Image (cartoon, rainbow, N blue to C red; front, side, top):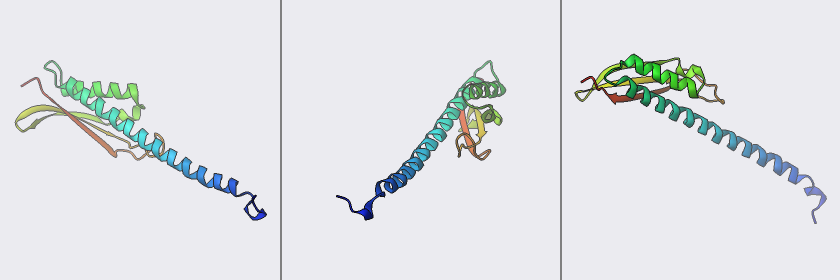
Length: 126
């Protein structure tokens, strides 16, 4: 049997453990959200680079394709800063697509222009 000095300790234990579990859940959720957005942007940048590297396309077509894909899967503010350029890597012509987006820190909100993604594809115009 519990003495009078231990009454109510289960409530205090529950409050402390629930607070820690809630904090842990929010941290894991936030990490998952940041990784989801990063992986989505990598996929969109890669597809934009491949599209812009086609023989009948320009790098600006790749920008349009990447922006379209980003807007289809994420809020449109993630597609505000997408650029592409022709580049040369080890003597090989490539198309480089760059996406600069906010890093989600508190849900989808976060500091602007922190997450920088680049993707390259071999240019078919060589």
